[in-house]
Amino acid sequence: DAGVIQSPRHEVTEMGQEVTLRCKPISGHNSLFWYRQTMMRGLELLIYFNNNVPIDDSGMPEDRFSAKMPNASFSTLKIQPSEPRDSAVYFCASRPTQTSYEQYFGPGTRLTVT
Amino acid sequence: SQKIEQNSEALNIQEGKTATLTCNYTNYSPAYLQWYRQDPGRGPVFLLLIRENEKEKRKERLKVTFDTTLKQSLFHITASQPADSATYLCALDINDYKLSFGAGTTVTVRA
Image 1 (cartoon, each protein chain N blue to C red):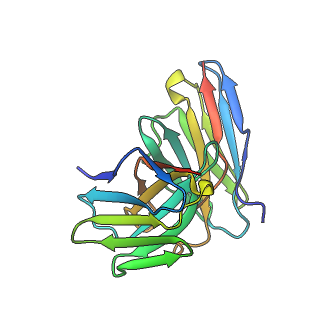
Image 2: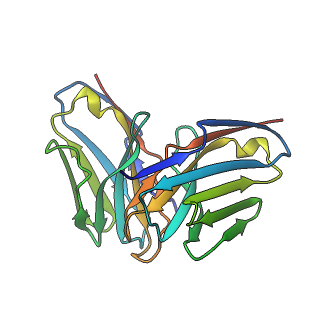
């Protein structure tokens, strides 16, 4: 299996622009997570999907952030409008079932907002 | 408030020695604890999971202990190698899907 796939790997954008990050989970995994990692705050959960349904979005920092999972093999995280404080590495992770606890992370997208 | 502390930000050891990393937590009652490895520019990789009723778990040169009374987990890398150099993260379950991660300890193994 190719593992969790994320694109783009790097994104540089100007403040105010819309940013869309993409994720393809491992085939057959029915749980998907979006995380953000910064030096100051470490690894934080933004949103959790189970069977394509958002279950917990309490970690989404503001209304500027939104996430979708239209099908089992694709998810997006959108930031509109972006701000410099959104600069971070964003990870997508998937998990086989609700009773499997280990998570499989993608390579991440490094976002820089200038 | 809930807190996870990993002993030190960095650990430098000689090849062949045992590295011991600590994960302490307060105001949590985790049913299990996980350890992940993260290399620069990559996502975390799952290593081991230990449940609250397990005292010790091993995988090759890795050993994890879990003491729910002390609220502490120890992560050991025996016979360390330069390839073990990475950042190691502990993670506690908040519920059946949510993990809370520590800040990580960066291990450097000198040849």
